[in-house]
Image (cartoon, rainbow, N blue to C red):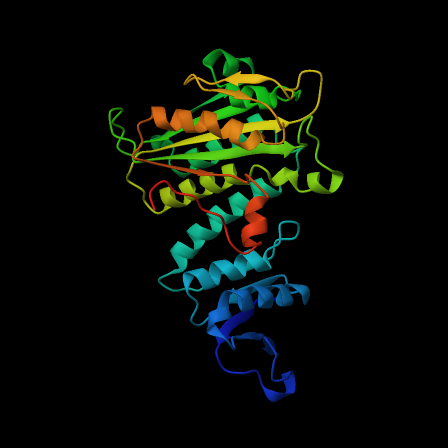
Amino acid sequence: MTDMKVKITSNPAPAHWGDKALVSLTGNDITIHIRDDADRLRSIRKAARQIDNLGIPSVTLSGEWSVIDQVTFVMSFSKARNPGEVTLCDNAERAEAERQVTAMMFTRKLTNDTPEQLSPVGLAQESADWLQSLNGDAVTYRVVSGEQLAAEGWAGIYNVGRGSERPPAMLELDYNPGGDPEAPVAFALVGKGITFDSGGYSLKSSEGMLDMKCDMGGAATVTGALGLAIMQGLNKRVKLFLCCAENLVSGHAYKLGDVLTYKNGVSVEIVNTDAEGRLVLADGLIAASESAAACIIDAATLTGAATVALGYDYHAVFSLNP
């Protein structure tokens, strides 16, 4: 079957498609009609889904597409369950678009994996394997899991994850393209990797628990970001710390009233086991601080308050360096 070609234009659709038509078809050509450039990416997402709903399995992008235009189309046309095939524009921006799609597809795949498919150790290992596949000579790592976490003093990850039969884990990964063990660390990335969050003894409702396979989205995001930077030729040393655990209920789970003592001497009393994100991130931030990184960035699905404040179209950002 010949691929359908998809192009973008600011011209309106032919009259017989209607004056508000977003998509029109002529032979093997599909045209996306962008009426408002301020709403361009939203229109591309909507058009990609319309084209996918027509049952078209593969398309080729042609004409004038920017990198972000192409990435937006691919991520909207290619669903996780039934990925369509998209051939990107054969232009100077194709290589960068391919890099971004690769990173985003990996990030989306990790985030969409079911809790049964993705264990804490599995999240750490799969992330390390992918990054090593991009530049194996520059990547070294270790996965600290189970009782070894307690032995090394990683109190947050260990205690949040000890209620599960599948052990918690922390990925410590070093991307050092120059190979100098004394090279300064430019960035440290820390990701919350809760592969499933029941809330623990501060149990979530069934509805509130439904999307909690995605509570490792922060870990997936920083892994994808580092992978993209590596593909773009990153020449700075970066360390990655993923704080991975399942927050479940059992006779071994941590409880309200417990007091955790961290490596830096700070103690924390547990008053809500569903506030586990900051507990595991604390370990990652301590490790990042020990690396003496010039800049530390963490990412997490940390609080529903961000959604209340900003809705679903914006990310909440907090910085100590405004």
